[in-house]
Length: 244
Length: 57
Length: 226
Image (spheres, rainbow over the protein chains, first blue to last red):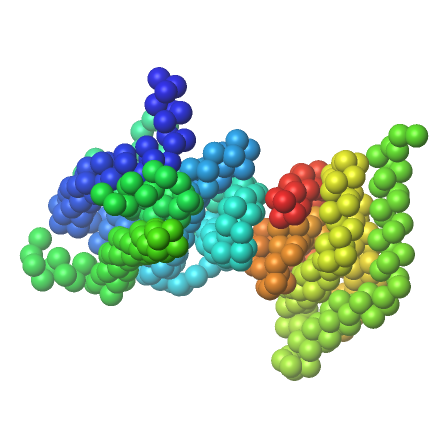
């Protein structure tokens, strides 16, 4: 079992395997997102209070979830690179950052557009929105810090440190709706036991969540190969891999 | 649901459709940007290999 | 003769303070900035006193934040430039203690100095006298926390050419909760309600960063000085 784990630390292995996983991840993402869109937009009944506007949840919630998931991945991978000096960790962190940042932006924009009909305002300085905005700044800071160093190794390590320091923000975002009185609604799915949504609305949401995760995996595979190439430029295996 | 009703989204169309369009754009950007940065990395390596071969000859 | 951590702490603290006072112009800059920013607001907006009072906490805190950020760049920079920082890292005396001493010295000459000027500024912003104690308490906790957070940012960017912009980008997201609680505390004090809850949260943030930030800043220095 552990050999599988050790192999993940090997750049040529990851380079090869990412190419193999890519079509499956992308295909799976396409299917689940496709199903989620159709079921969510057409067949799910309109909400009692929010009417058809609630359908924004089918892109807003997966984007927000992915923004957090990508950040934690980036922080954990960067931490692995920092503590155990496993370079693939830095590659994963570098690849995840732009993906996560784009989905943070998506969460903020879709949230803002949803907030206008629901709360009457495009923005409110409530804890969840504010901490999600902080997340976007953290992403930008990590990316800017990485590229500010001439030495890519130092850049990786500095960015990893910042990512780990900022990971404190993630539980704040997640629990903000519990800890503070907030405009933003509480947990819909994550409550252990019975989620509050009826099945016809819930299934497309779960499908979209899964689909976005698969999509993240697919895009990560694409970016990761480039990051590995950049970091392993001098190695012999790269020469062979490029020729093929 | 009627086709017209679908596009109208119960009156919320001008909020719902821009959301889906924006996220669709984000998904597309992710694919395009990932592909182009990976391609840039590949061409950098290729160029470095060519230079190395050139230096050796 | 082995040197204790306390001796190292005192040594570095004394050195930092001596060096800071040799450059009085550098000391005064953040203070002047603070005063200018806070007085510009009422001048620029020419609002009635009640509206000014509403904006006052936010203005005060944003100005304090920016003034602290101004002086952060210098936290490690001069030592990095002349090689002292590398000597400190190599000395094996525990970077944690050194970072704590440097950060504390930085706070003493920036944040604490802001505290001294703040009653003046608060009067200009029409903050009532009754709110002063809460304001001073929250500002002291807040600027202290800011110095610790800034140490992380300064440690990560020491040696970078355009480090000051990056420091702000790094420190500001980390400092946003601080701003929210600090302005909230002052706000409540002005309104006359109890600011105790917000002050407790501020104190908690301060203790959290006091203890953990030096680790991160020391790690940052080790990373960037490799």
